Length: 176
Image (tube, rainbow, N blue to C red):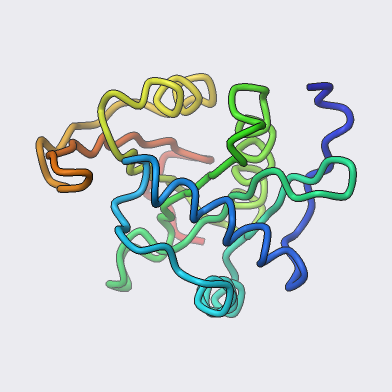
């Protein structure tokens, strides 16, 4: 893949069908998400709307007019003291994995999060064997902060969650 041919832009309503298809694949075939039933387009649209209404970034990667990946940030926790910390998600279409799409999306997402005044980004990576996602986050400056052992049950087995964290700016103690 030529990364210069990939356009990263804000997600639009017209992108939700492709996003739902990408996520459907990961729900059905990967422990990267612990969701068991893939949500439909309407549910994905509702999730996106809730995030955008609260000022969180939601991006897509587009190549040749097709959405090939997406990334967004959302609340890490709902209690007010966590309001400067977000959790990131990134998913790439199966035919475009390991081509740099995730890194392009995440780089843009981190820049938007910083611009919006968020301070910390938490990655909750499903499956400690998901080395591609762990390495992607490491390349982008995330540090491993812990592993929750056997907390998700999917595909007839238990999976870990890997927690990684990246500070966006400053000392992490200042408010916006």
